[in-house]
Image 1: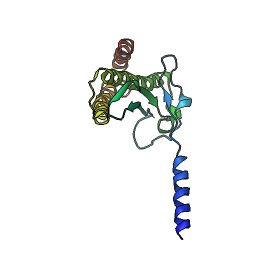
Image 2: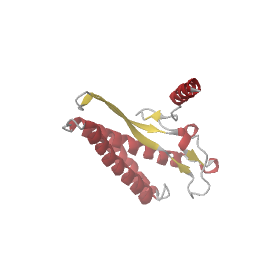
Image 3: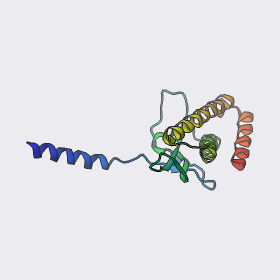
Image 4: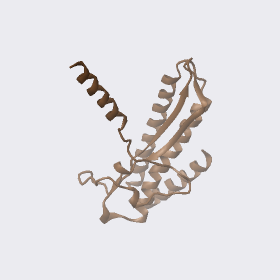
Length: 175
């Protein structure tokens, strides 16, 4: 019986090690999203015709004293195809550009987070401090994403959309 429990535990550990992370696409200045990148199922109840799922991921090394190694810290903006979707009957180049702008906003905030990490004076409590920085920038990202959708009326207001595209392009050049 003892061997059965041990065998089940080993099998469980092996299965857990094969958990597959969702597909993700890292932001690149020379690569724009295409409708082929959107692989999720459309949400018929949401009232929207497309949705971009994006976020920031980070990797870092903390030494035995709890201090973060800034040289081995990387922040990346990612697009998540499995959670991003569109309604095929409503695809337009303008809508795709709107969704790209959402991804670009995430890239801007990944750069902001990286800059804040690089300038922060970490203590032996680095893990908690980097988490707090992430949460702060993530909230700023969400606020900007909501403002973008509100001001553009989800890409309906073309003049507001144009202004946002110009603003985001400037921010990408400066960040």
